[in-house]
Length: 173
Image: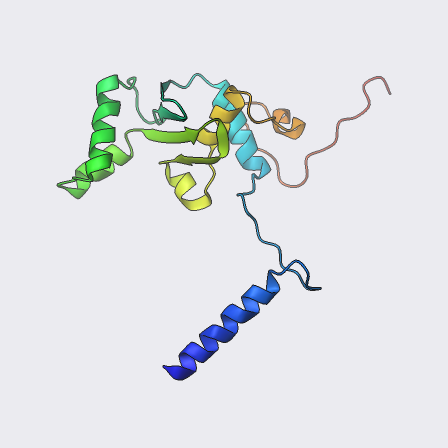
């Protein structure tokens, strides 16, 4: 155990030195998740589509309830209340009911229009700490400026491999 703790302390000491900005070999780390072009495109297309979003706002916290694309009927207020109650109590009697409710709707929690620290209950957010729902709501509330490269791809088409082609001059032949 003594050798293990000695090695562990050496690793931690090395990591602490590596993130010191005064050092020559400074290793920077991200404080916020990066937003790739693919996520920007899907969020922009999601924000432009007709998605039903139920909103509840208190003084500083806004909750957005989003219906996944697989569902055909609109969310009701009773369903959102029941989802909040089950989520708060964490009283899932069967795993199947848990899976059903977790895939029935997505909940985005945003504090004071701060989309970078918002949280979503969708699987994409759980993995990458950013999802199209958060960005789509930020685009709709005009909190996030969409880069021009995002608007190049029509809805329904996939982005081609490689760097996007730059626009040509309009009046040159």
